[in-house]
Image (cartoon, rainbow, N blue to C red; front, side, top):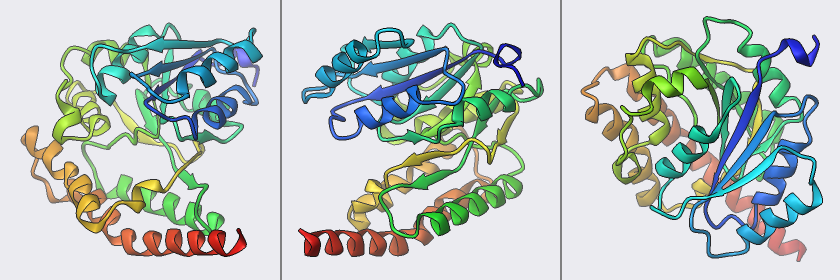
Length: 274
Protein backbone atom coordinates (compact mmCIF):
# COMPACT_ATOMS: atom_id res chain seq x y z
CA UNK A 1 0.00 0.00 0.00
CA UNK A 2 1.29 3.45 -0.89
CA UNK A 3 2.18 5.68 2.05
CA UNK A 4 0.08 8.46 0.53
CA UNK A 5 -3.07 6.35 1.05
CA UNK A 6 -2.44 6.05 4.78
CA UNK A 7 -3.45 8.59 7.44
CA UNK A 8 -0.76 10.92 8.77
CA UNK A 9 0.71 10.03 12.14
CA UNK A 10 2.66 11.80 14.86
CA UNK A 11 4.69 10.19 17.63
CA UNK A 12 4.60 11.98 21.00
CA UNK A 13 7.28 11.15 23.57
CA UNK A 14 7.06 12.69 27.08
CA UNK A 15 10.49 12.73 28.73
CA UNK A 16 11.90 13.50 32.16
CA UNK A 17 15.56 12.79 32.98
CA UNK A 18 15.92 10.01 30.43
CA UNK A 19 19.54 10.47 29.35
CA UNK A 20 20.07 6.70 29.34
CA UNK A 21 17.19 5.87 26.99
CA UNK A 22 16.05 8.91 24.99
CA UNK A 23 18.58 8.58 22.16
CA UNK A 24 17.66 4.97 21.38
CA UNK A 25 13.98 5.88 21.67
CA UNK A 26 14.18 8.73 19.16
CA UNK A 27 16.45 6.82 16.76
CA UNK A 28 13.92 3.99 16.62
CA UNK A 29 11.15 6.51 15.92
CA UNK A 30 13.25 7.95 13.10
CA UNK A 31 14.20 4.58 11.60
CA UNK A 32 10.78 3.44 10.42
CA UNK A 33 9.82 1.60 7.23
CA UNK A 34 7.34 4.42 6.63
CA UNK A 35 8.43 7.64 8.34
CA UNK A 36 6.31 9.34 10.97
CA UNK A 37 4.91 12.68 9.82
CA UNK A 38 5.81 14.28 13.15
CA UNK A 39 7.97 13.26 16.11
CA UNK A 40 7.37 15.47 19.13
CA UNK A 41 9.46 15.04 22.29
CA UNK A 42 8.22 17.01 25.28
CA UNK A 43 10.99 17.60 27.81
CA UNK A 44 9.50 18.01 31.29
CA UNK A 45 12.02 19.89 33.42
CA UNK A 46 14.87 17.47 32.79
CA UNK A 47 17.98 18.23 34.82
CA UNK A 48 20.27 15.61 33.30
CA UNK A 49 21.64 15.36 29.75
CA UNK A 50 18.25 14.70 28.13
CA UNK A 51 18.01 18.19 26.64
CA UNK A 52 21.51 18.15 25.16
CA UNK A 53 20.98 14.70 23.68
CA UNK A 54 17.80 15.88 22.00
CA UNK A 55 19.55 18.97 20.65
CA UNK A 56 22.30 16.76 19.19
CA UNK A 57 19.69 14.53 17.54
CA UNK A 58 18.07 17.54 15.93
CA UNK A 59 21.48 18.64 14.67
CA UNK A 60 22.30 15.16 13.37
CA UNK A 61 18.95 14.80 11.58
CA UNK A 62 18.10 18.30 10.33
CA UNK A 63 15.61 17.04 7.75
CA UNK A 64 13.67 14.83 10.17
CA UNK A 65 10.24 15.99 11.43
CA UNK A 66 11.64 16.08 14.97
CA UNK A 67 10.42 18.79 17.33
CA UNK A 68 11.43 19.29 20.95
CA UNK A 69 9.12 21.16 23.30
CA UNK A 70 9.74 22.23 26.91
CA UNK A 71 7.01 21.76 29.50
CA UNK A 72 8.19 23.67 32.57
CA UNK A 73 4.89 24.67 34.21
CA UNK A 74 4.30 21.43 36.10
CA UNK A 75 6.07 18.17 36.85
CA UNK A 76 4.11 15.18 35.62
CA UNK A 77 3.23 12.95 32.73
CA UNK A 78 -0.31 14.30 32.19
CA UNK A 79 0.54 17.96 31.48
CA UNK A 80 3.59 16.85 29.50
CA UNK A 81 1.60 14.40 27.39
CA UNK A 82 -1.15 16.96 26.91
CA UNK A 83 1.26 19.56 25.53
CA UNK A 84 2.55 17.02 23.02
CA UNK A 85 -0.92 15.89 21.98
CA UNK A 86 -2.09 19.49 21.58
CA UNK A 87 0.87 20.24 19.29
CA UNK A 88 0.04 17.43 16.85
CA UNK A 89 -1.33 18.33 13.43
CA UNK A 90 -1.39 14.76 12.02
CA UNK A 91 -4.54 12.61 11.82
CA UNK A 92 -3.29 10.06 14.34
CA UNK A 93 -1.51 10.71 17.64
CA UNK A 94 0.90 7.93 18.59
CA UNK A 95 2.21 7.96 22.13
CA UNK A 96 5.15 6.03 23.57
CA UNK A 97 7.38 6.36 26.62
CA UNK A 98 10.91 7.71 26.56
CA UNK A 99 12.32 4.22 27.19
CA UNK A 100 10.31 2.69 24.34
CA UNK A 101 12.12 1.33 21.28
CA UNK A 102 9.66 0.96 18.42
CA UNK A 103 9.83 -1.97 16.07
CA UNK A 104 10.85 -0.69 12.59
CA UNK A 105 7.35 -1.17 11.14
CA UNK A 106 5.41 0.39 14.02
CA UNK A 107 4.38 3.53 12.13
CA UNK A 108 3.38 1.53 9.07
CA UNK A 109 1.34 -0.99 11.05
CA UNK A 110 -0.30 1.67 13.21
CA UNK A 111 -1.37 3.65 10.17
CA UNK A 112 -2.91 0.47 8.72
CA UNK A 113 -4.91 -0.10 11.92
CA UNK A 114 -6.56 3.29 11.48
CA UNK A 115 -7.61 2.60 7.91
CA UNK A 116 -10.59 1.01 9.67
CA UNK A 117 -12.70 4.09 10.26
CA UNK A 118 -14.48 2.41 13.18
CA UNK A 119 -11.22 2.41 15.18
CA UNK A 120 -10.72 5.51 17.31
CA UNK A 121 -7.82 4.33 19.48
CA UNK A 122 -5.51 1.33 19.62
CA UNK A 123 -2.89 -0.23 21.84
CA UNK A 124 -0.37 -2.98 21.15
CA UNK A 125 2.00 -5.51 22.73
CA UNK A 126 5.54 -5.01 23.98
CA UNK A 127 8.87 -6.77 23.91
CA UNK A 128 10.92 -6.37 27.10
CA UNK A 129 14.33 -5.65 25.62
CA UNK A 130 16.16 -5.84 28.95
CA UNK A 131 14.92 -9.31 29.92
CA UNK A 132 16.17 -12.74 28.86
CA UNK A 133 13.86 -15.05 26.90
CA UNK A 134 12.64 -12.08 24.85
CA UNK A 135 10.78 -14.15 22.25
CA UNK A 136 8.98 -16.18 24.91
CA UNK A 137 8.14 -13.07 26.96
CA UNK A 138 6.85 -11.26 23.87
CA UNK A 139 4.54 -14.15 23.04
CA UNK A 140 3.33 -14.31 26.62
CA UNK A 141 2.68 -10.56 26.64
CA UNK A 142 0.70 -10.74 23.40
CA UNK A 143 -1.37 -13.69 24.62
CA UNK A 144 -2.12 -11.95 27.91
CA UNK A 145 -3.22 -8.74 26.23
CA UNK A 146 -5.40 -10.63 23.73
CA UNK A 147 -7.08 -12.44 26.62
CA UNK A 148 -7.60 -9.25 28.62
CA UNK A 149 -9.07 -7.55 25.57
CA UNK A 150 -11.62 -10.36 25.19
CA UNK A 151 -12.49 -10.54 28.88
CA UNK A 152 -12.88 -6.81 29.39
CA UNK A 153 -15.96 -6.18 27.27
CA UNK A 154 -16.23 -2.51 28.17
CA UNK A 155 -13.60 0.10 28.96
CA UNK A 156 -10.76 -1.39 26.94
CA UNK A 157 -7.62 0.26 28.22
CA UNK A 158 -4.80 1.99 26.41
CA UNK A 159 -1.22 1.19 27.42
CA UNK A 160 0.73 4.45 27.51
CA UNK A 161 3.95 2.81 26.39
CA UNK A 162 2.35 1.80 23.08
CA UNK A 163 -0.85 3.51 21.98
CA UNK A 164 -2.43 5.71 19.34
CA UNK A 165 -5.67 7.62 18.94
CA UNK A 166 -7.32 9.87 16.40
CA UNK A 167 -6.59 13.55 16.92
CA UNK A 168 -10.33 14.21 16.57
CA UNK A 169 -10.99 11.86 19.53
CA UNK A 170 -8.36 13.64 21.63
CA UNK A 171 -9.91 17.02 20.85
CA UNK A 172 -13.29 15.69 22.01
CA UNK A 173 -12.10 14.50 25.44
CA UNK A 174 -9.25 16.98 25.93
CA UNK A 175 -11.02 19.13 28.50
CA UNK A 176 -12.65 16.25 30.38
CA UNK A 177 -9.57 14.25 31.36
CA UNK A 178 -8.40 14.34 34.96
CA UNK A 179 -5.48 16.70 35.38
CA UNK A 180 -4.63 15.18 38.77
CA UNK A 181 -4.27 11.69 37.30
CA UNK A 182 -0.52 11.73 38.01
CA UNK A 183 -1.08 11.72 41.76
CA UNK A 184 -3.14 8.57 42.29
CA UNK A 185 -4.21 7.20 38.92
CA UNK A 186 -2.92 5.85 35.62
CA UNK A 187 -3.24 8.73 33.17
CA UNK A 188 -3.50 6.36 30.19
CA UNK A 189 -6.40 4.45 31.74
CA UNK A 190 -8.06 7.72 32.72
CA UNK A 191 -7.85 8.75 29.06
CA UNK A 192 -9.26 5.36 28.04
CA UNK A 193 -12.29 5.78 30.31
CA UNK A 194 -13.09 9.22 28.92
CA UNK A 195 -12.76 7.94 25.36
CA UNK A 196 -15.13 5.04 26.05
CA UNK A 197 -17.65 7.32 27.78
CA UNK A 198 -17.73 9.47 24.65
CA UNK A 199 -18.48 6.43 22.51
CA UNK A 200 -15.03 5.98 20.97
CA UNK A 201 -13.86 2.47 20.08
CA UNK A 202 -10.55 1.19 21.50
CA UNK A 203 -9.00 -1.97 20.02
CA UNK A 204 -6.05 -4.22 20.72
CA UNK A 205 -3.75 -4.28 17.67
CA UNK A 206 -1.14 -7.09 17.86
CA UNK A 207 0.78 -5.67 14.88
CA UNK A 208 1.66 -2.48 16.81
CA UNK A 209 4.80 -3.73 18.58
CA UNK A 210 7.30 -1.77 20.63
CA UNK A 211 10.16 -2.60 22.94
CA UNK A 212 10.12 -1.33 26.51
CA UNK A 213 12.20 -1.61 29.65
CA UNK A 214 11.17 -3.89 32.52
CA UNK A 215 12.79 -1.48 34.98
CA UNK A 216 9.49 -1.04 36.83
CA UNK A 217 10.03 -4.58 38.12
CA UNK A 218 13.08 -3.31 40.02
CA UNK A 219 10.66 -1.69 42.47
CA UNK A 220 10.31 -3.26 45.89
CA UNK A 221 7.21 -5.45 46.36
CA UNK A 222 5.64 -2.68 48.45
CA UNK A 223 6.29 0.01 45.81
CA UNK A 224 5.15 -2.25 42.97
CA UNK A 225 1.92 -3.07 44.81
CA UNK A 226 1.27 0.65 45.33
CA UNK A 227 1.88 1.22 41.61
CA UNK A 228 -0.48 -1.55 40.50
CA UNK A 229 -3.20 -0.39 42.91
CA UNK A 230 -3.56 2.63 40.65
CA UNK A 231 -5.78 0.44 38.47
CA UNK A 232 -8.25 0.28 41.36
CA UNK A 233 -7.89 3.97 42.17
CA UNK A 234 -8.48 5.03 38.58
CA UNK A 235 -11.59 2.93 38.03
CA UNK A 236 -12.99 3.76 41.49
CA UNK A 237 -12.50 7.46 40.78
CA UNK A 238 -14.77 7.02 37.76
CA UNK A 239 -17.32 4.98 39.67
CA UNK A 240 -16.43 1.74 37.88
CA UNK A 241 -16.40 -1.36 40.06
CA UNK A 242 -16.76 -4.19 37.52
CA UNK A 243 -14.53 -7.13 38.50
CA UNK A 244 -13.41 -7.62 34.90
CA UNK A 245 -11.67 -4.24 34.99
CA UNK A 246 -9.38 -5.54 37.74
CA UNK A 247 -8.01 -8.31 35.49
CA UNK A 248 -5.00 -6.22 34.30
CA UNK A 249 -4.14 -5.48 37.94
CA UNK A 250 -4.20 -9.18 38.85
CA UNK A 251 -2.17 -10.01 35.75
CA UNK A 252 0.58 -7.53 36.66
CA UNK A 253 0.76 -8.86 40.22
CA UNK A 254 0.90 -12.47 39.05
CA UNK A 255 3.90 -11.94 36.73
CA UNK A 256 5.87 -9.72 39.12
CA UNK A 257 7.76 -12.58 40.90
CA UNK A 258 8.77 -14.21 37.60
CA UNK A 259 9.91 -11.02 35.91
CA UNK A 260 11.67 -9.84 39.06
CA UNK A 261 13.64 -13.08 39.19
CA UNK A 262 14.56 -12.78 35.51
CA UNK A 263 15.84 -9.24 36.13
CA UNK A 264 17.92 -10.42 39.08
CA UNK A 265 19.34 -13.27 37.07
CA UNK A 266 20.31 -10.98 34.21
CA UNK A 267 22.02 -8.51 36.55
CA UNK A 268 23.95 -11.29 38.27
CA UNK A 269 25.21 -12.57 34.91
CA UNK A 270 26.16 -9.03 33.86
CA UNK A 271 28.16 -8.53 37.06
CA UNK A 272 29.93 -11.86 36.60
CA UNK A 273 30.94 -10.86 33.06
CA UNK A 274 32.35 -7.49 34.14
